[in-house]
Length: 184
Image (tube, rainbow, N blue to C red; front, side):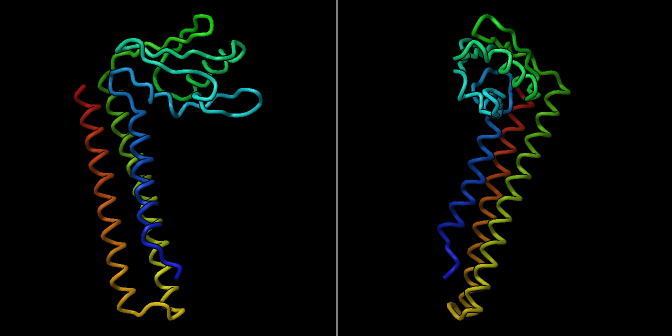
């Protein structure tokens, strides 16, 4: 059989977890090291995640510190942070880059809330793509006479219920993050 319920659940769970990772990178006013997770830096002729060229820490509630391992990469790390469009102003201090967290104004809060919504939509699209794959696999299995029409319909209902559940999880996570952004 081509249909695999556990694979579909795993892929949908992965989309939700990926969304949660993306949302954790959205700033809410407090310093959070996950904020720099999406930053990529051009070093040694390749694009690398910031975590592979530096250590990120939050020594204060409103300050991030980036300890670059190789002094030659400091300017590349600064450039990568600036390009990430996170609204942060890197200040270099030798091999350490300090990132003070500016207060969020109303306009920036709305932008971040909109971005959270966009992340949610991407996750929903990923979940729907998994649903489509599952439905196609069920139809193929029925054509090959591996399952009956009744089994296909019953399993399609299961796939739809899993889809609805995961989309609901996405909506909850996005709504929670938007409230966090708008109220802090």
